[in-house]
Amino acid sequence: MKLFIISILMAIYCLPAAAQADTALAPVAADSAAAKNTLTLGVSYSNNANYYGQKAATKIPYAALAATYKLKSGIYFSGLAYKLLNDSGTIVSAANAGAGIAFSMGKYFSADISYSHTFYPAYSPLLQASNPDNGSATLVYENWLSTKLTVDYAFGKTHDLFGTFGTGKQITLGSISKKDIVTITPSVDVVAGTQRFYQAYLTEKRLRDSLLGTVIGPILGQPGGQETSTQTTTSTQFNLLSYNFKCPLAYNRAHYLVEIAYQLSVLSNRAQSNAGQANSFLSASFYYQF
Image (tube, rainbow, N blue to C red; front, side):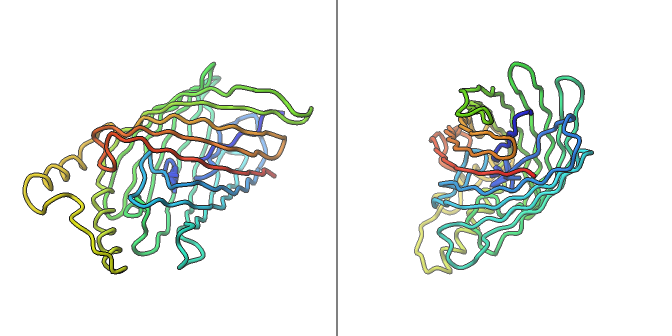
């Protein structure tokens, strides 16, 4: 039986996928051989929210529940609920609903087109909260390596365009029994995009800190003048954002997968959030497919 492999997005990939995500947490792989309806349920933990390799000013660990129902045709529907572990005020910190279609384009190519909407509470600390809607298109080339190009359009209070180009390879490490396989799937990707969302995030952060009674200094430097103009101009340009190295280690059986994943993201000098710095993300997930 073909390996049951499901990747984590945030952002999110989307938190994505509530993006990269956001991104669906359990994205659907295009598989023309799987001519049956499937339901996939998942639970995940991450030590910090990840938005295209970027993170918020405050560390945001979270847990998430995900569900994806895929039809024989490749059409699928997904739902996702997040709980920010430092948020004691609500049971659900954000919720995402989406739909899409995954299809084959020949022996080596497949594609995925999807749309999702995330419901954020007021003053959400997540970087992408100003853009709750996300349209995504992915083209995948599968040969010795798996190479993909993804374009995301995020919109709401602002609008941003992102492009992700990446490649990776699944490597079989062996088996513990006759019914399982242990794999590792190292990959690298490069993300470019606009950053209007970050200006909206800073505005919301000021309001949130003010409501909490926190005294904060100017976030963008001294008010007025050249720096504000430069930041605003940079946010509207399509610039390189991050280089990302991912290394998921997975235990696979016929119907379920257990995965631990590490991601190292090096931000470009054009990124408005911690430019030039490196971010680390660690996650653990479990998925079961019916």
